[in-house]
Length: 143
Length: 471
Image (cartoon, rainbow over all chains, first blue to last red; front, side, top):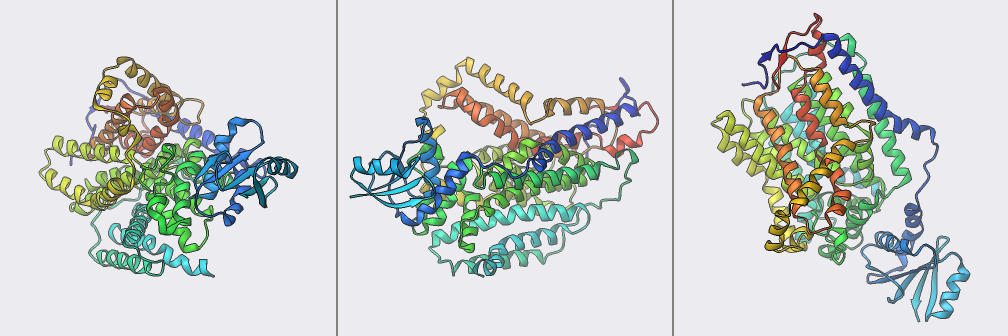
């Protein structure tokens, strides 16, 4: 069996000490850079959940109330640009339901800052509140 | 109680695969680690394929253990044959200068486990792509079983969810949830961690067999950079696909050492096929590995070349069946292909500034890869230069196979970007670093097959070194 690169060249020499040092430097660098993150996490205490995870924790229990089919999503939470992300998260929580932005579906999940804001929406639209989920999620049915 | 009773059924294909690998490869030294790691990946893939077949056949939950049991019995039957006569690994001296290397390895491994748990507590459902693509598919499959054909490509209405991606891992997760009766986030997080550990195991064991034990420890120490740990904990598919590619190439490299390599080559085909069932990029990896192996056998003038490629192709059979059904019947066309006509592709191919943009992005990613202060590619290049010297090397065909697979895949990725109908800068920004990560284990296998081992360097007591090798 032919081995790769067994031909020795003697064009220049690298001292054995330098070679051993190179290995030790590589080991030390790898250890330093790779262990830095877990050490920080170890002393950081309980991890802080990002907004997406908190959203999912609130939205996931709603799935027991929903049947398959399109589900609308409305919110009064700023900024408006997060609405696309919210729709994706809600789709994940309620899969395989299709989630669409807006109130154009028989069932609508609303995410409002307060119950008063949700009730204000009810007054303006032809929806009835059927469930409150978590602290900011509300499920509406078309009347 | 239901969950506890389900666990043995859940683990049946996994346990049978691990047992099969133990029986075939043996239990001595690195072989047990290799068997455990390969068996885990094989078991997950096998369980997914069986679940997929059960769904097609319309089997109920109660009937599925019959299929799993049949596969487990088949594996046990195959395990009864004589163990493959692998090369004997002699005990190597542990040089005093590097006696802490195994300790550093275990420390890094423990750190990676700690980080994985931390990230799971922080984001139990994984990163954004896990929620938008992979775990979304698992959840759709779990919650809408009768409509599994729609669920397996959920959400087909949104191309951003990549419904054409092959669902090997989402199928396994949905299967586990089905047995457990709950869509617990522990399952996808554990699967992600298993793939990371299995990747470490295959890299360590392969280099241990081909080169030396310390060489394996050193490679895994470099592998476990924060980048791969974060990617794994995000529950993306880049670590699993990297595992399958590494396993396929490792088996082909190891087959050089066996007098009867047929079984290892077939297994390499199985693993390459599973890479293709994990993510679309796997198809390119599969072709690159096959082409690189053909090239290696051709340059070696090996007579068994043709038959070896046939064995490799035979190993691809499960993946071809799975992908054939999924891609032709269930999945919508790929967005990169469907969005372009031949003339548009030719136009992109001859738009020369695109080459500059892609080459520049490749160079930048090489420079900024990983989470080190310097590029690990640069650090390893310096390391290779500094530690050059005479010594034993891996078999030439093994080096050509792994090097060819790595380079051909990189070239393939390059041209995928040249041809992409997406906005080029956007596409490069959001995917290139992950592609590098998929190839990271393969790159380390290649590099540490070529590099001198710590044992060899330590043996060079008399300065200056005995000579330099032409790499």
